Image 1 (cartoon, rainbow, N blue to C red):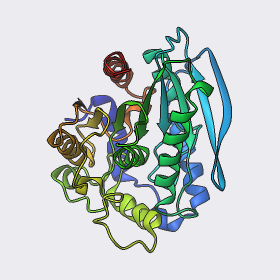
Image 2 (cartoon, rainbow, N blue to C red):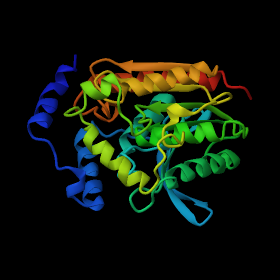
Image 3 (cartoon, rainbow, N blue to C red):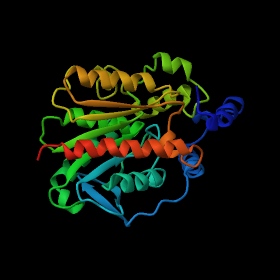
Length: 312
């Protein structure tokens, strides 16, 4: 059953669906996404400091934003990748979530703005995530105190990039204490029970996501590549411990649970946090649903567990 605070929004979305992404430009999609993100955020959260910067990689530069929380414990820095269906999202759309989580975890957050489709198709975003993992791991002193642990976290499409990059780098000794996957999308098939049940009107329409996968993949025609469909990795042994966050009324709920099961099959420590009555994107909906903020607080506690138990 959906959270009562969300019922009028779900009803309105079903009665008055937004434009199909094929009918508007990528620039307008991104503007609409920023406007939606602004409407969902709750009361502004202050942190100790915020600093915009960049990571210089081979042939490209990625914008970053470093959040230092009040009561920074110096235990960890969280490398964060925003959502936006591979085509939208930026540092601003997930600014409030990073602020809230930084304060709640008492950890620093480094948000990264990776390349988006359709200008930069698969595997550009994955390559950015892998390179960012390596760069931050090798230059941790730029962003955190000596001895701090590294956590990698992604939201929706950003969680997909994190899942793939964590799998691809799992034997590189990057010192990743945990991977946090917030309602990830794990392949273009979208054939689960939750995908059928919540296909439209629940803040993520699968018809739109299928179109976005087309924008993201371009001419890439092999959906069985585990970089496209992480559920098809044939070995995840040695991957970082994981926290997978899913929402009950999210079309992506079942595949998130399935990926947690796949990690568990390969003996990766795993925790699943399921938010009852919530929809895709709920962690950024503090302005609509106060319970969403409580779940952010709970996630922070679980992240602390992995940092405190990470090997030196």
